Amino acid sequence: MRRQHNSLWTSFPLSIAVSALSGIAVIAATSLLLAGITLFLLHEMIFVKYIAFLDICLGGISAGWICGKFRRRHGMKEGAVCGIVVYSFLAALSILITGCFTSPGKLLLLALMGAAGGVCGVNTKRFSKV
Image 1 (tube, helix red, strand yellow):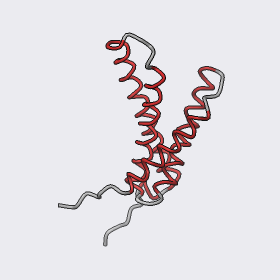
Image 2: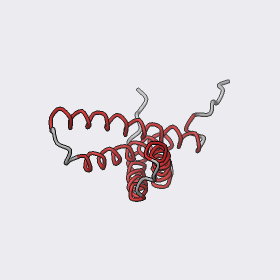
Image 3: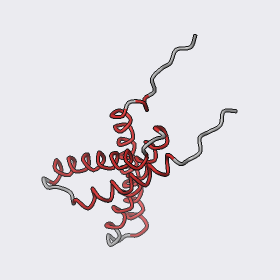
Image 4: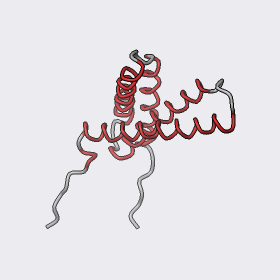
C-alpha cells in the first residue's frame, strides 16, 4: 500500500508564506538587476520611480502565480493574500531601515498584482505525465 504524504501546498499558511518569500526574492533580485542597469547603462536617477514600480509588480505577480500554480484553487483571493503578506514584510523592513511607513498605494498594487498572478497561475496548464 502506498502512503499518502501531505504536500507543502495543502497547508494554507505555509503555502502563503512560501509564495510570499518567493515574491520577496523576486523583488530583491530584480532590484539588484535593475539597479545595476541603472548604474552602468543609464547613469541617471530619473527612472528610479518606474524601476521600483516594476520591481513591486513583478514580485506581486510571481508570488500570486506560484501560489495559484501549486494550490490550484482560489487564485484571486490567495494571490491577493500573498500580495498583502509581501507588503507587510516590505512595510516592516521600511520601518526598520527608515523609521517610517511605506506608502499604502503599494499595498493596493501588491494585492492587485498578486490577485492577477494567482488567476494566471490557476489557469495555467498542468504538466502531463510522460
